[in-house]
Amino acid sequence: MLNHTTTIIALSVFCLLSTDQAAADSGQSAHAPFPPPLESYGDGNMVDLLDVLANRVEKGPLNLWATALFLGALVHSFMTHRFRHLAHELAGKHAQRVRDGVTDRLVSVPSKVLHFLGEIEAVFGIWVLPLIVVMNATVGGGSTLEYIEERVNFAEAVFVVVIMTIASTRPILMLAENTLRVFARLGKETPIAWWLSIMLIGPLLGSLITEPAAMTICALLLSEKFYSCMPSRLLAYGSLGLLFVAISIGGTLTHFAAPPVLMVVDAWGWDTPHMITQFGWKATVAIILSVLAYYFVFRKDFRRLQPNSPAAQQKQGPIHVWVTGGHLLFMVIAVMRSHEPTSLIFVLLFFLAFVEVTEDFQKNFTLRPPILVGFFLAGLVIHGGLQQWWIAPVLGRLGELPLMLGATVLTAFNDNAAITYLCTLVPTLTEELKYAAVAGAVAGGGLTVIANAPNPAGVSILMKHFDDGVSAAGLAVGAIAPTIIAVLCFLLL
Image 1 (cartoon, one colour):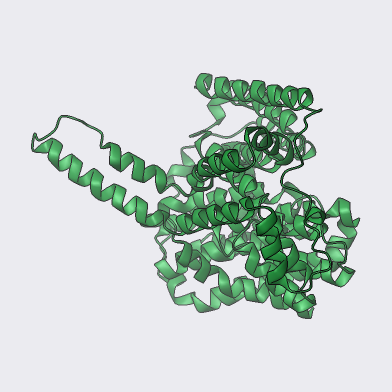
Image 2 (image 1 turned 135 degrees about the vertical axis):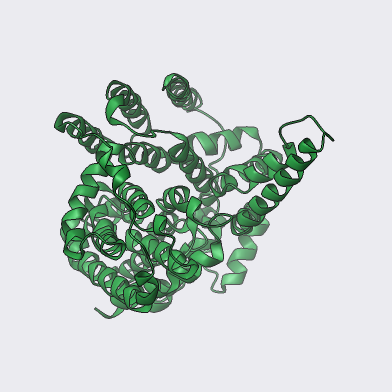
């Protein structure tokens, strides 16, 4: 069952080790640092933002090209549903031509190409290709290779692949389901009761098991307990946006679970007590208010949902305690090694072996969704690392309220972990500005698929419940209300 995937992962280990060796061999490289340090632009005395940006484009023309390609990828991510729609149309026309005997080719290549372009997880990876071409032409192959091998941190992408793989297995899902069932029973396990339990409790679990794991578990349970009941389009997108915002802010009760928080804890000396007192309790209030508000707004839509038959669940056999314990152990080890990509790959290899041994307790195990999500995040960090030339001066010139709102908006166009990381590069931030930056970044983490690292995992799991996939506009509309509630809670409480 796992021979091909294990081989792929083993090759990945070799590539990682080879990359480490190549980086070591090139340690004496004469290449100038790329992207150049922000202080190297010599614009510290410039007051006008446009002058700063113009100076940086003049000294580094690649800055403009990199941002243009990043915006191209962003626009592409908003159009993926259109590509998938065209792919389905071409596939239908090709099938008709096969039935009419016009062609004997069973596969429509243009349809497959359009379908691939419509995979939102592939978008930023696709746009890395023209970026590499432009980088080679402007700064040379050596600097390009050095940037990807040494300057880009793929730890987050690898961690999401590993934790999503573990969290999506049947033993972990059954454990999470049985835990949430305790609360769902208060509402007789109706779709509404499950929705409330998952939305209220699931995101807060992200502070313990990390946000990617919480997203995977919540999305899979919502798929089975809620989305399978065919909610209205408005309720479907509202729930998706609410989930993404709740996951983004729900990981702020600790200092190790949310990617945007991880980016600042070492630089700013934040710990779990600080996160609970400054962010966590406010995030909890925001989640409760958002869930109750959506429940009130969509109460008529909820009443139209019909419970699923539990027959399918009754056919599943019990899971031995040692099997669930083994999965939990692998999850704990993955969290402990979350900053070590090579170690994470070996954890995944051993976990795949464990899954093969416990195959009788697994169901529909696949690596495709986690790998696609990892591909998305890998492409995103490659692009995101080249955007600091304009994001840092923009953030550094904002006051407390503008910074919070600016971070919220910018998060929609870049990963919120990148936003908070760039804030650590601004030496003039006061404690109030640091708070504003992180609060805005986590509050805006549900507005788009790229706004928060776990979001692609949620889209990958729930996409099948949306016609032609998840619409970027639909997600933004569904997330805007809980985003505003989160901003107000962080601002006023």
